[in-house]
Length: 404
Ligand code: CTP
Image 1 (cartoon, helix red, strand yellow):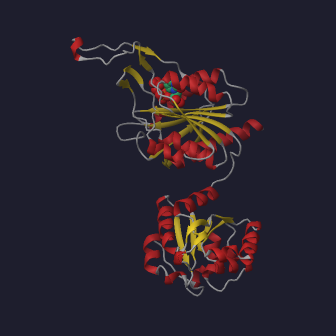
Image 2: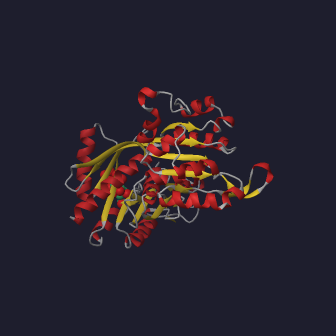
Image 3: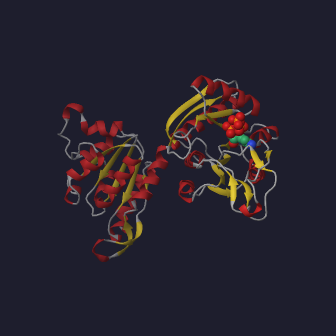
């Protein structure tokens, strides 16, 4: 996405450097538009190096490309951080005597501001009236936080931390097209116990399922994420007020929990890698070499959870399965996936190729999404969050088709 970060003249500008870094890391194209005053705090070379884009404050630069309005017109989001009392007043009045002002007047994109000023200036009726006006125009405001301010004062006026501004910004970029939708998602990989210290498991990290939960919550859904052996750092992405995390270890536990939470869900996604087999007997005590010989582990087949969910689904419930394949070529992969989709009866099947170097334990992914008729309903490659976006788009297409 094209994001304009307008920096106005406050000491908190140094924190905006980190915000720009976070936006770039999240894959966005960032153009920094500082005011002349802002450059007294952080200079042009820093903004150019960190944003990887040219920086100017003047409406008379790059006139050939009508830069004074083009930046605002092309933006998907404009962030003002820090937004000083003066810049908030100028925004409210629509003053356009520099690139900051023209960019804001020329944009139809969502605008997010992160105020930063002394507590008295923030509380002043002039500022409060300006903020109220901006809110009625649809401008989003993050902060200010209560805390220590420049000069040793304290009170409301501290600019929100870059991570908080990033979250508020990302929330503005996603459509709220899953508003209020109840969804249940399984993620991770099951572990089938052999004895108290050993298990049969798989390499699924839970990243894709966690990204599906985070994306759904950002788009307005109420999510129950059933996590099978996902590490805390991966699960951190699912920290959201609309995501409830339940834990399940083995396939049997996952089955019981998914059946419980699916009863209440409009959409169920089985992204977890479920063990197809479990040891018939689980030893109460650790198997030791003293027993002699090489132990033979007899296996029993696990229930197909997604097929069971399909057979007991309530009317209108959409069920999505995943398929992890290690095919010779794409044709074989899609043929196998079509058979799997028929066998399980899912409405959508998300197929991804896995292998020693692919799919599992990685940040990126590439998938095909098959519909009920086996036809391709979408495809995506990129970060697991981007793939999650494509899966939810496909779910939405099914929802609107079913609604007629
Ligand atoms: N699945 C399930 N219960 C199982 C095995 C798999 O619910 N016991 C679900 C997975 O969560 C996934 C889909 O079924 O949504 C496909 O999983 P996959 O491992 O690719 O398929 P399998 O059924 O194991 O088939 P195969 O081993 O032939 O690839």
